[in-house]
Image (cartoon, rainbow, N blue to C red; front, side):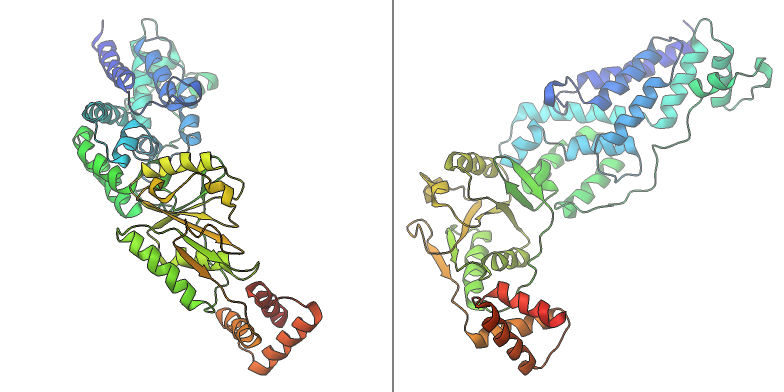
Length: 434
């Protein structure tokens, strides 16, 4: 065997061994044996190792799968993006164990091996892959003129001494495409919830020669920041499955209920500081601003993660959700808007995880033996209603004389017979601005 063929076989064999040794980070969801990106790397490298007439078809598949894998764009190279997303963001047995605080030495050893294997795979950049294809073409026992042309071109030589120029079809089959894997320098191009620590960990992987040495650091990262989608999002919606929500804003908050907000804030702050979590209930008529007040609380306490639960969820589903949240290191507020008491059937406070604060909104006080803190929003009087409209206007950068606002409020009440609440105040503000 020629030295060129041996060189190709060694390089390809090293990559194949690395991929086949993966265990913790293999994606076996949806019945797949392995993540499609790893499958396509295997196809490319196996065809190279066999020294068959090379074809870049599989390399094209690999490029497409790298773009379609959903990895976060951060390193400037789509292969590195995929590998770091696989390690840091995709949930696996190691990250879930670390997030729950349960250290498993067998998983630690397996993850160290996986990290070392991924480091080997990370060396397969676009240039290296096509050089291997060219070497395999040149090492083929009966290379055609296209193979000779590829070998000369990719090694920096000229094509004139190789005889007849390859035709267009041969060029497009063997020649590497314009580079598309590399797209820039390291940069966080979007925002993840855990970026304060995640950014430094990305850099550690880019700088470290031996990825296996980062196993302990990786375990500590997951044990502090959680795993999977919890690294990315702060708010979630539970409809039987936990789904991420975009960042939420309180919107039209006015300081009409400062005392009530302060009661909720004090309890939630004590919970965040490690004190016992007291379930809390916010009561008020429809349109009184209950949801807005809770959103304002979430805005003020950014370290509090939130799960919104609709009123049709069964207690058995909530118990399963609580178990999932129990296995994460963050603090959560489970918020049930328009509370259905049947959702909490059979659930008592001792069953709640220490990292979950239960909160709900209801038109009237209910389940007061469960909700240790009940806060009621008072009905608005006209003067308070006028003040709310003026504060909403000021929040939009608008100012109108008090008498103008008073007249609009009185007219709206007379015409609509509406209740004096935040929803009505928003409507009057919009009418004044129109």
